[in-house]
Length: 109
Image (cartoon, rainbow, N blue to C red):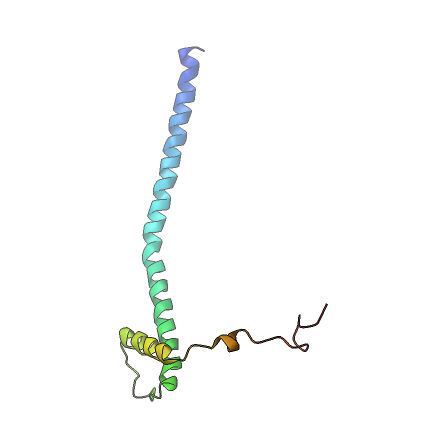
């Protein structure tokens, strides 16, 4: 192999590496642009879930939702945790109820 024939391969290799770097740079720029949008969507999902949790938990703990329209996120989470702690744990008998013939898979072989 002559030195002249190796030069085009080296140039092509360099240009392909440059193209890959350029693509990587474009991808990084795209991520940089999309990151605030993704973060905004994530925060919106969290806030929507907290609002749903608030509407579910307030009636369960006997609070009037009209009086608690502006609750902090931490308050909603604390109320939910306290409510869940007060729920009695299901007994082993309830969790493993015996099957009857009317239930699918309850028949004898």
